[in-house]
Image (cartoon, rainbow, N blue to C red; front, side):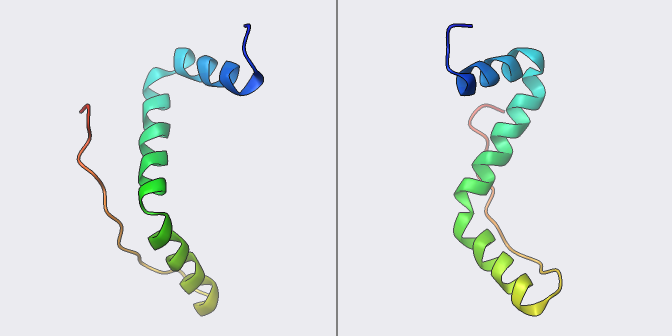
Length: 64
């Protein structure tokens, strides 16, 4: 592969398991879109020293 290691790894994951790659990207989108809410929830969990329930927003898939 004539690419840097990062892009080579992406190519391997995409070709090795396309479905799992799509799932990983969907999870990444949810985490990115809800970064502030997830950060606040993690801070609340640390302060309370117990698990917290959090509300996030999940966008409609672009390519279902």
